[in-house]
Length: 241
Length: 241
Image (tube, rainbow over all chains, first blue to last red; front, top):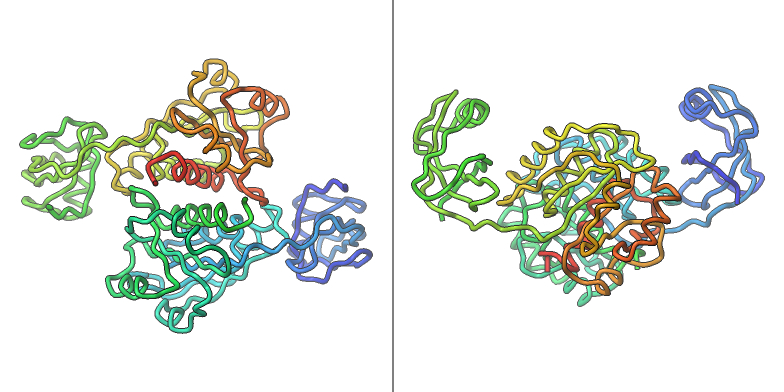
């Protein structure tokens, strides 16, 4: 096993012997900030081809180059789980995206509910957060962050084969629901700080593929609820068991 | 049921008919920022006597007064679960304390491990975060934040009847461990970003009351791991089921 301490995402095909040019930011980071020189080994992944130990073959602060030497890990896809959430304050939205990537969500979908204040999100910034979280957590896959869509529309176009677990002041624990409904495609839906509107709640409860679960007796903030719900799902149906 | 939208922690005995003086900060918040007037109803809790709907009986911006009218909730103690964690960067440490309070930890104990950089913490600031989280999540109890102690010393003085769940690259899922060991007094121990040292890991594995569990195939940040571990414990042994 080759020792690599730094992990980088690159948007470039990876294979043994493949050379990979670095962009200005990455070159600056690797050779300026992290002071790596030629011969140093860096872990590379691109979200498609797994992870490679790559050698620095040109340590140029503006346009460096790496060469993949050996494949260190196969691509490991997360379970088919989406996280839908209503964007909240900036820091907490960033946090939800970071946590979703770490916790192994395959897709991250900001949705606008009736009580959501945000009219827009910075999709590129959120995507960058997901990518950074993947670099950090050792994942070989980067979840896609989709654009902001209205919950109404998302539900209207929903694939009925994908179950939805949503958090409500319901009395049913997640364990019961998850073991009753079992595997396949899933999404977790986290409402905004003010909760769902009465109309949204009614609509969700009426959907066959949507399941209300409880997250304990205290009121959780949206970001806490996201991590807790992802934990329960991963433990019962995902790749934690 | 009396409608109250604002919840305040006060360090004062509460009972029906009891008048409660507010300090300068609370008076400023309630009458200056939130523009409440005499007759408004506020939810009060003190971590001991439950929750009361209290009426504003003096709306003075520097020294207001409330009078408890009716008890709205009994004191609800969280399960006997402590969270021990190694302090990390400021924002993430604040976050861990907030989340621990929301998730229902009874006591929050910062510990210094070999790979912990922090030599000190602001205990008063962390306690204020726990309190704010309790106000927010509707809890009637505020977990105590203890001072920073060395993990070594904490383990040396440990009550062997309190089980410890620590997160390690172990192969055992939390569910198995928690259902095998069952209830009683527990603590969750979260290591720093760099993990436990080899010596700490050996020591923990050798303790009868310490149980290593896995939190999935990705490497979680300390703050994510704290929420995930609290979720698993609450679901299996705590007040979520």
